Amino acid sequence: MEIKLQNSVSGLSVGGLQKKSSTAAGTGGGNASSTSSARVSPEMSLRLSEIKQRLLSEPSVDDARVARIASAVQSGNYEINPQRAAEKLIAMEQKLPEFS
Image (cartoon, rainbow, N blue to C red):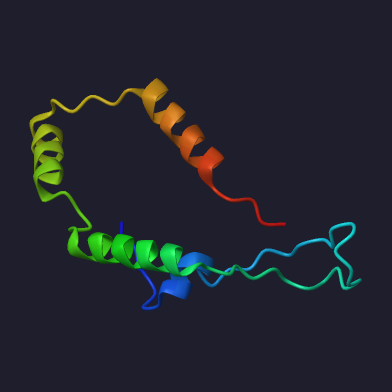
């Protein structure tokens, strides 16, 4: 699995995706098809930069874990727990944002 980060902090805050928003009552403006854009405070921008640097400095793959699992698979000692796998998939899906 590879995680690609954009080069700008604003790319981290918005991620290149904009969610369609409906016009909120009392905010004026009647264009329901406009997209919302996130504004990032200087503090949040600094925090995002720090997180980005930490993520870029970490290896994207835990080589030791991969080696342990590969060894267990090759030796026939790797057991799959279907219940745990299903729970992890459901939890991951619940964390995904909904875009409509």
